[in-house]
View (cartoon, rainbow, N blue to C red):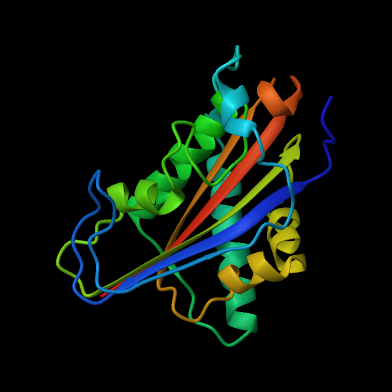
Length: 205
């Protein structure tokens, strides 16, 4: 049975600048690439390998009121720090929602998708680079047993320096939130009721 205290995993950010092209199977074709990865908790190790063992008997559901509350809480915190409020865009919301649903259905917790796709490639499928000269994305994850308040998730991110840096990033302009609930989370969730929140941040121009 896993430890069912609220859990977060490492914040991640990717930035590409210069002449860009869409990601391909051969990787990013870009002039300039900056990547940062800081592991805050070791909860993601071996998660993908275990994902195929069992899926959720009950399908996870999107918790729209929680999503909106996280949006409101997160923007309130940004305003308190003199930062621009972010606007929700469909692409980032779809990327975040899809990732939370997959983690809840397959019972893993990681920035990478179950098939090994990195979070920036996943986001780029929804939040297109196109002909823009700048594209950046960041992601914070959270999970907890039961159905937490939005403030609990946002406060947990703020308590972690890596997650706080993503949440309060000055360069972000847009974001999307995906919050889902599953009554009996498989895999690392040990059959417990679980809420998973993905926050995807973006800027492009």
